[in-house]
Image 1 (cartoon, rainbow, N blue to C red):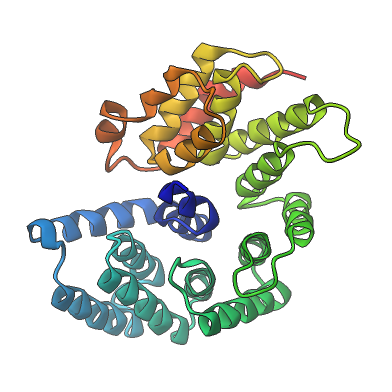
Image 2 (image 1 turned 180 degrees about the vertical axis):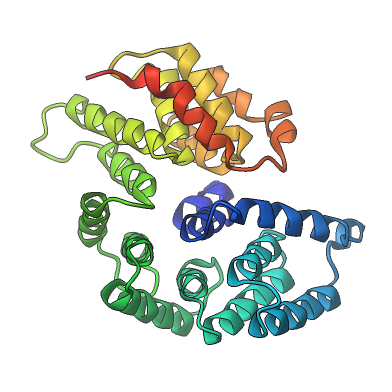
Amino acid sequence: MNSNRSAFTCLTAADLADIAASLCSSMFRAHLDTWRDALQGRAEGAEGVPESYLMAMRKVISAEAADRSIDFEDAIAAVIAIHALGTTAARDTAAHLLQDLQLLGSETATVLAAALMVHEPDAGAAARVQGISLLRALRLNSPRVDVRAHATLLLADAYRCGFGIEKDVQVALHLYSVALEEGGCGTGRAHFHLGTWLLRTPTEGERSHGPRIAKAEKHFRDGTDAGCMRCVAALGLLHAKGRANHPDVELGRELLELAANVGLVPVIDQYADAAPAVPAAITFHRGKWHRRARGKSLNFVQGLRNLLRSSFQMA
């Protein structure tokens, strides 16, 4: 099994950044870029950023957030930048810093802390159960619509994967549908998972896979319009494989390039593994496109939405 599949079952660094961005103001991405640049400057070759430096960062940021020298949003951006380093020390530092911010009263930090408790690949059983409890409490009690929406989606992910709770795909699908009905942030991710579920092999009694593909395509189009780059990748695959309602191989190539530009190689690889007949065009997501795009802000999505909207005026 391709190791990249973990990106489908677990929360990726990009997913975490997207959740944080949707819970913060438009300045969040700028804060995030600043912290990323600062951390890159501290990297020591293959060793990366020293653990001692990360520990010092946690102490300073926690103290400054406590006395309001920096706001919670800036501190959250630091957490995301640290977590994205990917090392065990970095992930641990990010988790501890989120706990510090949570104790200071940041509800955004609570959402992100719960997400990591449940969806980190090496999360323990006790942590996952605690994370599920936090998500349920947020979904029921938070005064913020965006916080409740993300709690719903993260619970759906947990039911889908069986993380911290008994796996139940039907409950997951119900929660994704609830998230769509409520609208707001995260609807793109709900469209993605509902669409991918529809692409499964038809069950006994279903005469054609065609209607499922058509419904999945609509989910991916709607998710793309909501700014979900996973949906961009999925829609690109449907076009590249000739399975879309009105297949356009060139559009499929362009969509795959765009998805790769924001680092969605694992998602594309997962689809490619599941469907080896995908044309060679999907290799556009490798090499120069991925290298060229490193460090780009996901604000790139905003421009993409206008660029592609005219292509999605299909029934």
